[in-house]
Image (tube, rainbow, N blue to C red; front, side, top):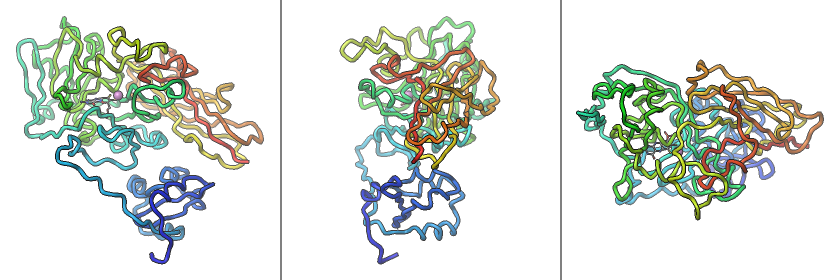
Length: 467
Ligand code: MTE
Ligand code: MO
């Protein structure tokens, strides 16, 4: 439409709240949706697009794919955008020149290598996190893999077997619903205490998917390895993604852990019933349920047993915990243990921080996730709407998991009353208890560490009731 004022994308980006009015773009139109927000059938989710394009969200939710919606939108049109975002130019020498396309809904914390998380609000919509919304944690460029020439090397004591993709998919298929969580999830809450080195993850560097593939034990057997009797000390995995000096991403788990998980470790070629996307390890990644993301090696190239831990930087010089008095001048990475099973954690996903509740709200409905490493199921989640003084027990969504093999997460919901006539800020807090009665620490201070990993402190989110 012509005759309307024009705005730059930067101008649109300044309109994200009711005070400044809420603007979004669709194609080359600018829309002021402030007055539409409260009547949106999808609730406040529409605010995720505030200050930016609607397309990523419309593509996510099929309900928007009908012509009527454009008509509704046109009522709110206030202008046109002056420019299109510049197309990213790629140089031929860029090691990141052949990265996969990504869903624009993901919020990047770094672009090369690509690291991104979805808005946490979207995590609680489904027990299984959709592939295109699953957080991405890459340390290196995504390798280009040709299915026809791909092989997975599995080294036994006497022979090395090379499994092609076709070999793998012919073997019995096993599925497991399991969380993959980065040790750095919720790192951004640690930064307020003291600076940490690492990507500034919010609370969505976690996802829960159904992974399908081949049992590791089946491949090992074919190579003459019996996990029960082996005297080797570590099970080592190598990826295909290479750094500039040729070193590859890799990881290992102690053999005792491999023994206890046994048939549950899978070499997955499917994620939620679809071929694993490139960002998540196409064509094959290992899934070690209950264990930190860093060991779930993607683009799997090689598996072997060893008396030594993986030599990889991210096994030996990273992804370890320290006390809060250790900093970069006195850290000795050899003095700590590589993170494996993660501690119990939970987070509030809905409402997002900063949400304005409805005027006169008498209660607030809070939703989130909880999970613990090692298959320890969640038995309780507590929610507070007064900064942690009083608690309400959340309702746990049934997830079909057994208590000591609960690899998947637990989604929960609680409606918590607010004091009568309350206006102003409300500090929402959640904390979970696992089947071993492990609990979360109340504050970040005690668990702060220089790399900002393992933040499982009570999760706090402040929202407000307008006057
Ligand atoms: N595997 C390879 N080959 N390269 C990597 O950079 N990152 C690890 C792990 N496996 C990584 C990898 C880390 S730290 C995490 S948290 C998970 O993959 C993230 O998995 P996702 O990107 O599928 O969410
Ligand atoms: Mo990670």
